[in-house]
Image 1 (cartoon, rainbow over the protein chains, first blue to last red):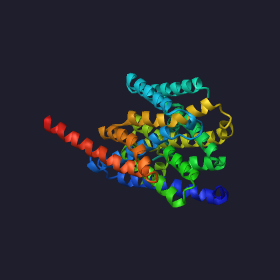
Image 2: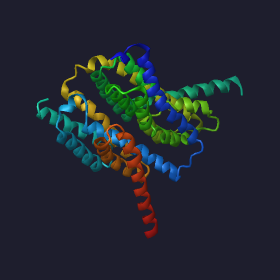
Image 3: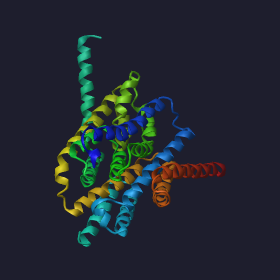
Image 4: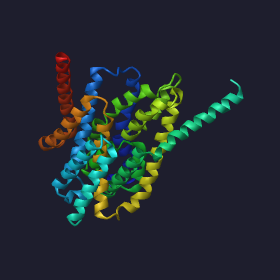
Length: 114
Length: 248
């Protein structure tokens, strides 16, 4: 992988990473100075933005890399569902949902002999 | 203004900066650091050198954007393709920043300062700021946010640099759990910090649309799921809302 060497890697990260994210942050500052909190346009932007991240989340769960790539899908979905149940039972406390989900996944991986 | 008053003012600015910095010990900050350990193991598996991972942490900062950047690098994408993928996935930063700016801005906060501070906005800093900034006097909010967010970025750059060399030796169960922490954390924190019903709708539609478009058009899946799924969620929520208003 030649791109990994030298200044090109840093230029790649700066353009495809820094510029690609900070453009939106700067536009956000400019928009935030005049944006109406209750406008329908902001609602649409919110919806698109959230759906984009949700799609990323789904891909991370369905098509993980590394160790989890070898784990069964039912275990990942199961860990997610049990975590979600705990999250709602605990009056939507993020820590409870996250901890439960990770505990189920960890136990499942251990049981499967990882 | 006398010199005494100025000294007093300087001190309290520093005090507010440090109050923000202390947020590094809060729960969201700790979860984010664990997620960064997970991200670090992803970069080790992707074969990205540690200096570049530290550089990436500081300069990109937003975790989902970095995950997409790393997957683009992994799949051998061109600069233009990687730029497009990261740009499209980072659109959400704009409404996040736009919603935060009215909260952070004091009567004398210059625009250049907001532009600089906006770099440190990502999910965790945003959730933290939206929750706690109310308790800070308006003219001190930018300082408070600077203290928290700059500390958080610096701490994670150090963390990533140190952990990189350890993370490869983690037992598989730990490595797997750390990887899983990122999607689970994002799900829980987006749901928890949502202040509008359209966010719940978009989250649900996006979770289904992501895999669907990955199956139909894998090259543009995230974009299609975002624009298509988001628009669908927005339309649905809007129709539902207008029906509620009519029946009420």
